[in-house]
Length: 233
Image 1 (cartoon, rainbow, N blue to C red):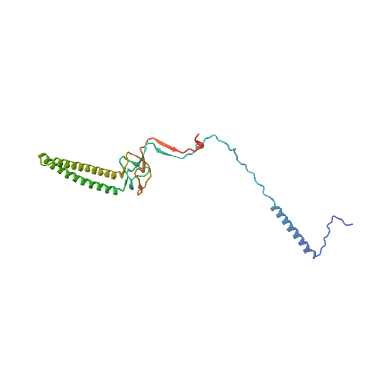
Image 2: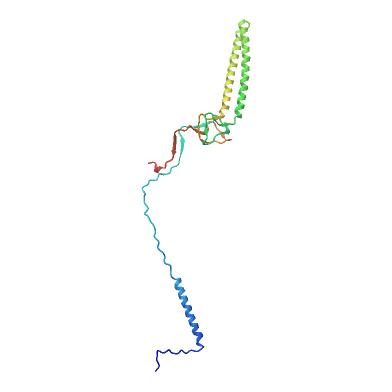
């Protein structure tokens, strides 16, 4: 009787060796494939991290709304030319400090200069006529007093002199007006202050009374704002 604990000899032929190797290789490849598939299907575990949170609510702090507006001096004056023309000179800009009597701007006064020259020429003509009428009246008056001239001649000479005087006076007023017109083409500051705004540019045609700049004396300020309807209360 053979003892079963003894190792039994394994019998195989040389032809069976390649088949066994192929099977072992196949089993080994399948094992690697199964291991790879099992690793690829495993999902990474997400790490939990703490998160800070807070409840949103009113803080009790009131926030003042922002409203657009402008600040201007209470004592501000609009300066303009009394005549129209082309603005030839503008010596100030916004923010400049000006003195009383300082030149602000000047219009092209060539037309006013021509008008003044014509008025002066007319005045000289009226003055010559008045001088001639005065000489005639003086001569007629002497003759009338001596009795060699009639009352009609005396009255006629006196009327002619009065008309010449009136014509000379009118021509003098025209000269004064023409000189004033030329003077109005120059704009000076009536007081010391600060230029708040400039609304015209050099070379621009401006009309009589059209605001050129705003000058303030300083002192108290005024704030002008536009408030929405929902905030009026």
